[in-house]
Length: 286
Image 1 (cartoon, rainbow, N blue to C red):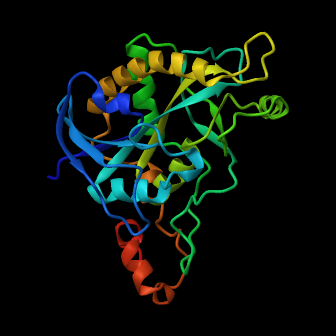
Image 2 (cartoon, rainbow, N blue to C red):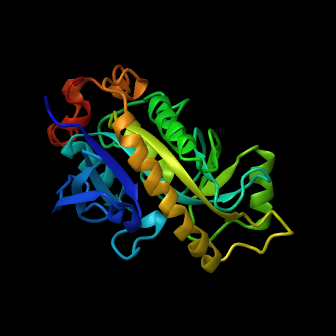
């Protein structure tokens, strides 16, 4: 039986966690260009892990500049079945405080300038995305966090904005009217591509501040974000370490078969090179 591989997308602190046994760094070539960086392979609590720095080593890539397709394709190529994503976010709720963690369950898309699908250029597919987060994986993450006594919210809607600037005050108030809980710049795009790649995806949202809607809290600054983020990283490391041995042995969720019946293009009409590039994603269906 092939050894299970769990992917983690986040910052550098996540693959420097205590107990992580480094094995190698891999540079994966993709049909979509270069991923954000080399993928660090190793083991945590006996589970094989693949860590990818979303913004590159040293945080050099803007949210809009991330090659999301290359990142997800590379993890799929390596055999990743689960992706645990972490990301900073701003709170849109009085109930979610800086330092809290939210296990996201829904998204609202406010992005404008990024590619978020493997479809197109000769192939049309429409996977279901009503429930964008893997319920099995998110439940494991929540239970792991709860067992550690970390202040964690089991569900929340994440507004994904383009960035790199934070929200205007008017936008922040609008998102609250939409009943969203947090705002960030990255996770939705990854979730869409992971669904097409039939990879289970869940997000550990690390709340760093109240977004600018809250008059009694200083408007968000990068200094504030970084200070709270450093505290959150340790909690995120603990959650991942506690969760990796609790993942389901068999994937029965919709993620594992998301592209079944989703591609509506006649297989004979799909360009040969595109079919080759997407073989690891839709090859069993086309």
